[in-house]
Image (tube, rainbow, N blue to C red; front, side, top):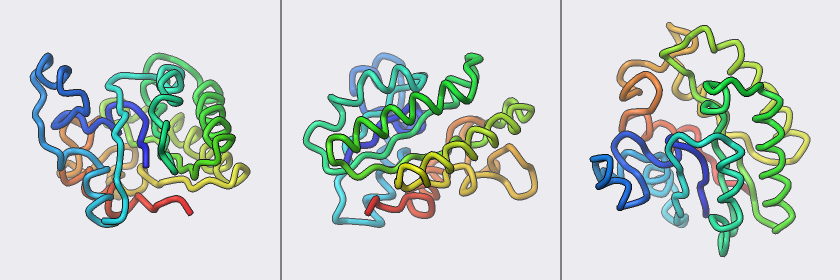
Length: 191
C-alpha cells in the first residue's frame, strides 16, 4: 500500500522517509513518528510505502503520484493544509485531490483520502478547514472512496480547531501519540 502526502504522511518531526533529507535537516529516525507504522501494527497484513513530502501542496504531491503508486494495490492520499496556508482556496485543493483519486481509480487501485488536521497556530483557519473537510467527505461519497477522519481523531474536544497537547509535537504535526491515534483510530484499509 502506498501513502502519499505532505509532512503528516512523512512523519515529521520525528521521521522522514528520505534518509538523505533526515540527515540534511537533522531529523530523527523514529519510525513510530508516522501513522503508517501504527496502521501496519494494527493491520499486520499490510505493508506501507511512505511517500510523504514535507511542505508540499496537493499540486506538488500529484506530480509524485504515479511513481509512488507503482506496484501498489491501494493508496492513501493526504494533503491540503500547505495549500491553505499559502492562500489557495479549498476548491483548488479539492480539484487536486479529485484528480489524484481519479488517476488512481483508473489504475484499478483501492483509494482512501485523509481529511485535513486541525491547525493549532491559526485557529481562525478552522472554518476554512471545516469547509474543505466537508467537501472531501462529499467527494469521498460521490467517488466511492474511504475518507479517513484525521481531523476528528486529533481535534481536542475542548478546543475546536486545535489538537490536544499530548497529540501534537508543535501544534501543526502530530506527536508520536498523535501518529499512533491516526494509525489505530483513523486508518481503515480501503475495501
